[in-house]
Length: 300
Image 1 (cartoon, rainbow, N blue to C red):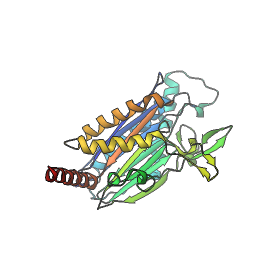
Image 2 (cartoon, rainbow, N blue to C red):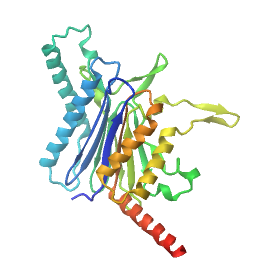
Image 3 (cartoon, rainbow, N blue to C red):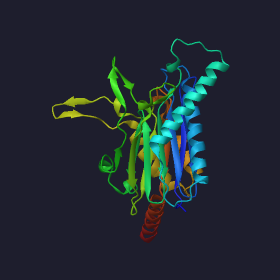
């Protein structure tokens, strides 16, 4: 059985309709976390992300029931292809049921997708589209503030996008088109850090995506500043470890909601986040807090 990590997801928007979706699944041998960003250039973006997340969650439940391995392996290309097949079938039926007669049937449904699967020894990540996947070292809050980034955090997601008319155009996604090349995911695997643990944050591009960053320059060269969202994330996680009595999924979810609410005035798109903290992180942070308390008492 996998050791007790915690994970949760949340979403927020300033728009009339939130086209993102998200979800998670806790199993005995693996845990999973999902984020999908329904693409606004498609007519039924919200339905697309909701359908894909629902399909992925059901697949996770089925995988748990039919797989007793301690460290199960996910076939990510098949998973994403099957998600596309499901969206195609759903879209075809939706078109019939609603008597839709579009000029282009293949530009109706489309979404990005980031999936994260945790087993006892590894964290597997697969994605199509853009957004971000931040890997944060579990001992990040023991470093002086100037060293937090990039020493302790790195974005693992290289967006599947190309510049087009001054904007980013995705060439990998999940849609109802017949192009199956577009749903082939990028797959990453991380061996767990047994000493300090791993914190993984996945999010839609409403929070962060490299293809939307703007580089600046001065007499020392070209630079890219770290955005407010990441600084605030460090602050929120640090406070979570310091002030939370019991580290649970529910408490983590409260923290994510507070985080999104604090940043909401800065968002101009749907913003969705998912965070996983491995059991090693929780153990390290408990010991760190206990050590701090002992030191404070000894000084009194």
